[in-house]
Length: 258
Image (cartoon, rainbow, N blue to C red; front, top):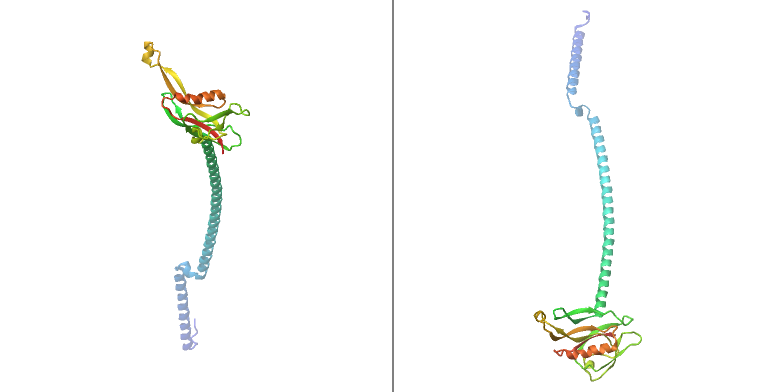
């Protein structure tokens, strides 16, 4: 207790001081209670900002790592695609070269066949003549010869011979300047490969066979290969064209040096 001896003014000052202290304590208590109810970001703004900055930095690092992985993956894919494109390009070039080589080989083959073949009349089983291309492999060495066809009426005006160095090879030894053969284009040195020939046979219709008929003669013209045949047989074959009832020209297939 305060002594009565203390002056009244001191007593009043002490009570005022006590009141101020109490008010200060109440103010502190209320402030603490209010602060505890605030969000942590408001209570500790610096710590929260540091946490946000740290979190943002971690996310940036993760994003950069993902972007780097994506970049490397794109580079790997691009390298693989480029390698595949180069391999495909090489394969295409190889296939193209192979196709060109095959085409060139086929072209040479076709040229070779055209060089050593000719379209000639071929007698079919029904008696019709059909133009067909027939191959005549070269008999002269060196690959500088070719096959030609000539049509000319009899007499041809030719002197044929047999080459002693190549058995069965009939050659044109002489060509009469005013003869049909010369006019048609036959040249000295040509090799005779095939000619038309005629043959007469007895043909009897089926109804005559049943009745005991003897048939009737019929002349057919056909292509006759002279390769390997004796010279006398070749001459007889050429002369047989006189039997052609239609009087057609003689076909000659010749091998000629260029």
